[in-house]
Image (cartoon, rainbow, N blue to C red; front, side, top):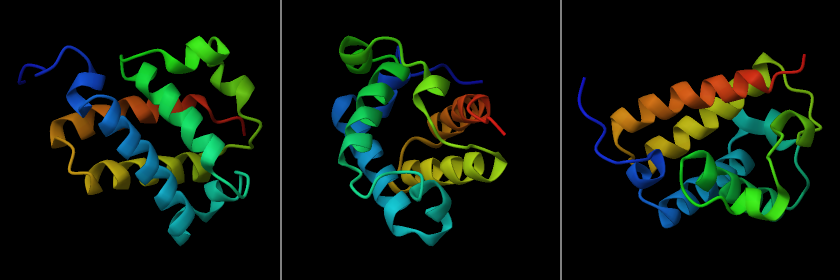
Length: 128
């Protein structure tokens, strides 16, 4: 196994600009791709607030600045997500994130590692 080239996933992704690009591409794809209609339907018409909060959350989750925690406290993911999330929604979210990472040409090793971590978090979010 190769050594991790950066101290944190946040650094490996490329810092705030790269996390912003990932968050933006994720929400763009969610809005545009019919394959993600199920998770898109859970969100308000405007994705601006969701996009911003996800960027803040993702920075901290990846080991970077704790923008979300500084503004809102502990993420409490399950409590703050009033959505009905089953296997289909989990899998759409994961596919959308994987597509965003792939389109942004992130390091394939990092994508594998993040997909594993995203799966654990997304599966934890299932509530039905």
